[in-house]
Length: 362
Ligand SMILES: Nc1ncnc2c1ncn2[C@@H]1O[C@H](COP(=O)(O)OP(=O)(O)O)[C@@H](O)[C@H]1O
Ligand SMILES: [Mg+2]
Image 1 (cartoon, rainbow, N blue to C red):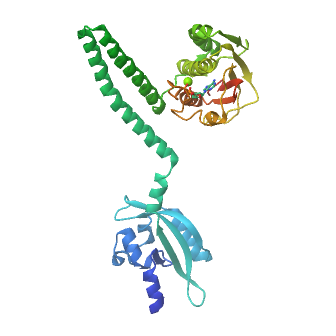
Image 2 (cartoon, protein in one colour):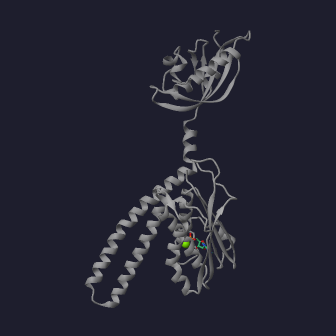
Image 3 (cartoon, rainbow, N blue to C red):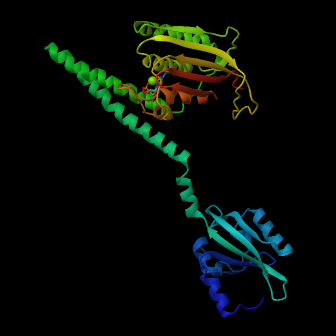
């Protein structure tokens, strides 16, 4: 191989990306300064070493270099791992392979342009939205713990004070402290439930029983507002595979919302049916399958479009004592069951919440 002339040599050394010239026997003939930086090796240490040493255990790279030598083809955008002192320290690189042609057009080697992708990959990692959520979740959990610990102390002290204080008027103040502490505690606990991945315990579940358990609890409250429930159940509805306790939480949230949206009472319909028009694909089963649908139809206040857009945003509430966590938690539970929630509403007319749940999880 002829010695490259001065200008070419300067170009070779000045390029900020790594450049190497590989011989037909796959050893490194020349390398530029960027290579020293990138691989933490001096040019002398690299000279005449096999290409393998820079890209260990990557037969696909060696393969491509061979193809360039034989066919003269070029390769762009080839992902690889560069190795520093030992094969254990690796960093991501992006390669461009071109044939090195002599003046008579014969292929005398392969030129590899090497871009260090470490920084770019790091930035890409940081911008992954899922990671952000995980971090936010972890932060929320940490914060929740920190909030709950002193709350326990405040509550305990307030209780002790209450026992020692004679003036009943002052008891009331302390009662406020205690109930408000309980409220914060409850809020933080629900926030933690949202952030913590909870395990679902599946068993055959009768959704009508789940619904009835809740309706019994809420019947009184609703009757006081002149409201009543109307159950329209499909008697042939199959059992579903679900976590009963978690579903109770979902329907309690939804029915509470419906009641809260109906200050004038009215009829609240709870409809169950088999849903054939909608299929869920899950990571476990890619075949579409049947769902049941539970519909909660209220004739309450309904909501405007702005509220509808933010329904599942944690902490978004239009109520003075609301938490804004009912719907996000419900959605999470339903999605854990590979189901879906659909909400339609018209201001002044009422709201329909549809919950779809697959009959079988497997
Ligand atoms: N059935 C409903 N009718 C009218 N508005 C509703 C209904 N369900 C939910 N919403 C609206 O969605 C908001 C968020 O609900 P949710 O997440 O359960 O939190 P919260 O009930 O604590 O406000 C409520 O504040 C309310 O504005
Ligand atoms: Mg609610």
